[in-house]
Length: 446
Image 1 (cartoon, rainbow, N blue to C red):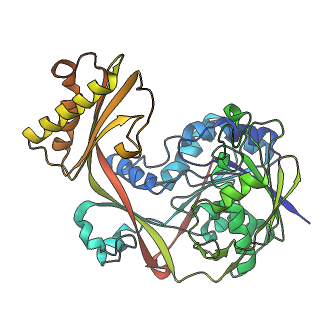
Image 2 (image 1 turned 45 degrees about the horizontal axis):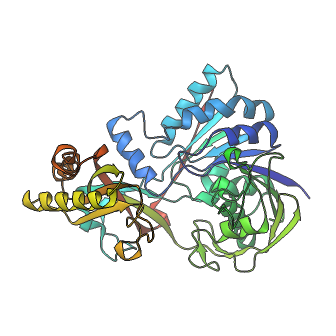
Image 3 (image 1 turned 180 degrees about the vertical axis):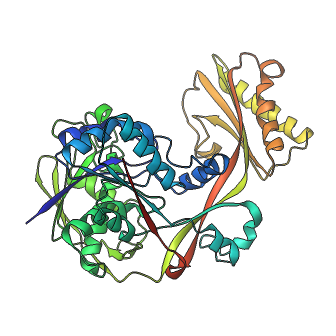
């Protein structure tokens, strides 16, 4: 039975690059997939595009392509990625420029567009799934709206001979399933096969998580070689059977336990995992170790897809101001508490307008609050953090400024002050009828 080998080159935008190089050079793969879009990433990319129309693609697209493009061309490895973010065409043009600079020719690069549906979202009110509110509640604060594509436009690009496919907001598993649909000729209404393909994509999409990265917990779940963690390879047969493995000798591990943790990652209902192409069912999946760093996965399935597509709507939610400073030596905790009291009083005196305000002793009560704080001997050092949510940047700036003034207006021995004020881009979800979303594929030749 024919097998396709797919390597996962990235699990998020800022992921390591060298494991992808190792996959290309030593993995014996047919496809290298870079999954680089989180829910807020594309909204931030849209802001970058608004400032410069030539940008809006992933900032690490260039170093990634420079690292693997020549090897992939030489070995006939096709690349699929959502690093196009808010501007797939610009990402494709940049990739063509990189290919030229590397002396590569005859490379077909596809830009998949159409996921930007901001006009459709602005034209009529739509229900916000998380809050039950309406997109009209967000007013003019909406900065992006991107529908989750399925495999169809990626398959189309591959059918046109693309060596590199660059998308915007595609569903993460679709990036891995599209090569299977193309290579095996799976029908787009073969729900059983598409369910199995979704299992493949879901297990590979977060890269190093399934090879032991996120799995590691010293003394409980030990994983060796995390400094050079190997990213996963999926060996997929025509019937949808998957074997998860990695490059021999790379760090990390692939076991039934690492695979099971990743299978359940981000799932609400394993029997009803909604994707653009299928409602996948993971409830009967079987996982079996068949050798060192080799785990077989079978029995995923699926049901007919829905009539709607999920849309991530990015909007300006608020601003956050933050300040930090450290205290060390005898009485560090007491001085830290006094510093927080001073800032609390100062913000009240200045009537700084906040909708949320936190006063933390990092390492003592910053995660679970004062009732769950550390017990036993008092720590020799402590760092305070004051953070607040505001409606304007000007108000946010005041919070960090007051922490910084503790240098000379607070307890003795403060040092290492830090302050920041930033815009907060939040995301909510909308369900949009499929008929309102179209896609396009443009091929560039390098």
